[in-house]
Amino acid sequence: MAHSNIRVWVRAVVISFILSAVVTIGASIIFGGGASYFPPVEWDKVENMTYGEAAAYINQRAQTMSGWEAFRNGLPTWWFWRQLLQGWALLFVFGFLCCAAVIRWGGIRSAPSNPTIERDAPPAGRPSL
Image (cartoon, rainbow, N blue to C red; front, side, top):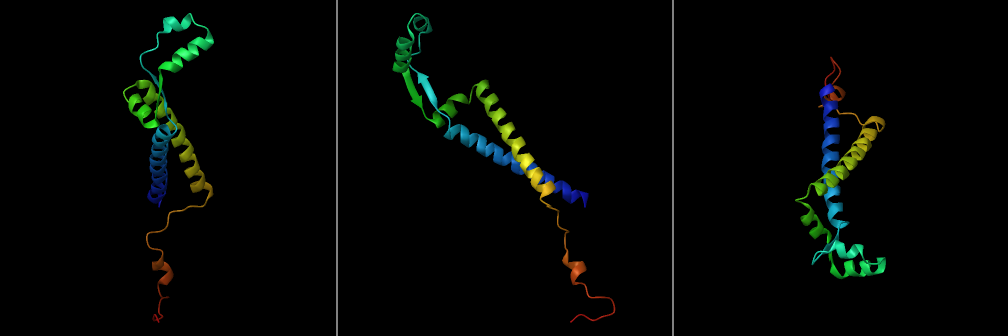
């Protein structure tokens, strides 16, 4: 019977892993985005400008990126992977705790392999109808 209880927890881990991975990657694409600067911003010039001039100078060079472009551009960087893994870990823990609450307090128990054997067996000495 202990083996079947382990299966419930393994399922909780697998469900939490898959859902958190899908949500993390999907959210990074859907809610992602940003700006790239071409030609590159000359930061030496920006330091000597007023705030309004600097904002106008940077906005002239800014090109917006979609979430998919930002996702593809971020793949080779360690910073991107670190942020993605932190988001995934947070969602994994949250999902697993939700599964644990349902398992623990929701009364989910593993079913016997064949519960009808004992229930449907005829009493000893009586023929079945």
